[in-house]
Amino acid sequence: MSQVRGRYHAAYLSIPTLLLTSYLTPYILGQVLGLASYYLIPSLTYLLLIFIILRYVSIAVKIRGIYVALLCAMTYLTMYLPLGLISGFGLSPYTLGLTSIINIVYTVLQTLGIELSRYATIRLLKRKSESLALIIPSIVFALIYVSPARIISASLDIDYFKWFSSIMLPLLARSALASFICFNSGPIASFTYVATLELSKKLLPVLPNLKWYVLGFVGTTSALIGFIIAAYAYLSTKLEPKFKLGSSGSSGVLRHLIFTAVVVMLVLIPIGVLGIKPLIIVSGSMRPFLDVGDVVLLASVSLGGVKDIHVGDVIGYVSETGDIVVHRVIKIVKEDGKIFFVTKGDANREPDRKLVTPEMIVGKYVTHIPKIGWLGIIAKKLISMIMGAG
Image 1 (cartoon, rainbow, N blue to C red):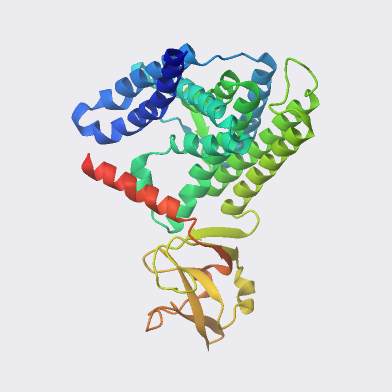
Image 2: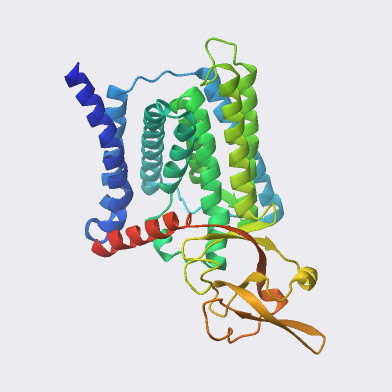
């Protein structure tokens, strides 16, 4: 019995090791090994990962769960593709040929390896907490699809906000839905959902040319609709023995509904749909009011709404360098019928050199959450150190 338990522990320990290897290999050894580091080594790593999980983790295939996954994927495609009729289409970057075939094989192995790992992680965490079994895999397996190089180069400015809203946020929403599907219907269903989305973009000859905010809206909204579809399917078939909800009883239903509601809020707030934009504080210029690692929430301000900004208010504005600065308004100046704001960091001796115009304002301070932004700051520094060592 102890030997069997040891093999299970070894299998679970191999999951993060192999995932990290496949994730970092292209960016550490890319210049040395070339194409092999981008496709061959990660593909072999994912293949080994698939073998280990299938060897030690029992998996049941739920056909109705696959139908739900396909319906969720089609929701995205039916929102995404027709928009090309309005914005126009562009040629897909993935051309047909040997490279395309290699890329497709890699995508299938990557997606299957990730979804099996998601399932194994959910099973492991589910013993302690069903909430953790949904939340942690949603975050971790979304980050796997993000390039470390892009995380390193990302800065807390408008470009970063566009990237987060159009790429990272839809990935988080998609990963949350995949975790929800995997939790209830297993890894084959979640693989069906993610693989359909990934392969459609690599097999279609043309793709819509969409603005960044449209991409973010489609990616997050389709995931929200997918949550509604999946939750309805699981709840409506809860009493059927072949397709039961992950938890039994009303407490399990409530837990799933709360998770869905939290995901909705987490998706809508960062993208600005609710008029709230989060920002991580990375300097001490506003101490003691705001400190490094705090996440500040800014309420969007229209050009006509600047009259509601008063001396003493904290605002976020775009500086000359493109960074978003969060400082306090210390004076309001009116010249030739125009309004300008003089700002200053609470910890700074002098006010900011440039007057702030209404067009530069991103939002007005609502509240802040202390220290939770340190996770993102530390992750960025760790990846930078790893890349620097490579």
